[in-house]
Image (cartoon, rainbow, N blue to C red; front, side, top):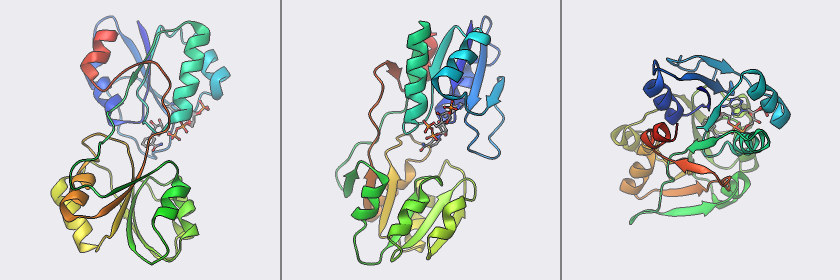
Length: 241
Ligand code: NAP
């Protein structure tokens, strides 16, 4: 069975490790190409966009794909929509491997927002020390609030970092432990954390650390999901396969 796995997440990597060498499976893991040096997976992989729904359909036909697993990030909404449309048009089975969202617990001081622009507004007018953990692509939106000092953590150096007049850039790839997150937030005097509601343990330490330290969190909620068979468990996806 020829499988296309849409990746770029720890869940996709975990699935790749489980199915590597499984008899009867011929998998291909696809990356968008955002990370400059992704960890090399133990199954065949490709890098780069397909060219919208039409390009994805051409790929699926030419590569004779039998089933697709969308294991993209919860915020990669366009790729998920494209996969749903292409699979529907071609009658291909599609399942989603998606980590559960974080939910608010006692002690959390969350302000939920729907967009990055709303996250900027939620920081308020007075200067604050802000921990930005939203990736590099949308950093420039925070240039609208130059009064804050931003501690920015990304995997690769972001192009837009210069748009933030007061910042410190930390280049690091998770997972991050709760202990390390508490140390970092304390040392940097963080007053507010900005995070997408990505979910998952690998980057969840910052949420626990913020709760422990009583730090406010501006939480960008997930975009609406496409209605399809979905699970947060690699085992459930293996059963589906
Ligand atoms: P997006 O907005 O949903 O997708 C934009 C375009 O990137 C898609 O239309 C597609 O191009 C291409 N693309 C996305 N995922 C792809 C994949 N797995 N394989 C091949 N092409 C892909 O996605 P995004 O938010 O930019 O995220 C890009 C990648 O980074 C995803 O793979 C995602 O899993 C990963 N990621 C995203 C975030 C996040 O916060 N958004 C965080 C961590 C990891 P074409 O239309 O040309 O096919």
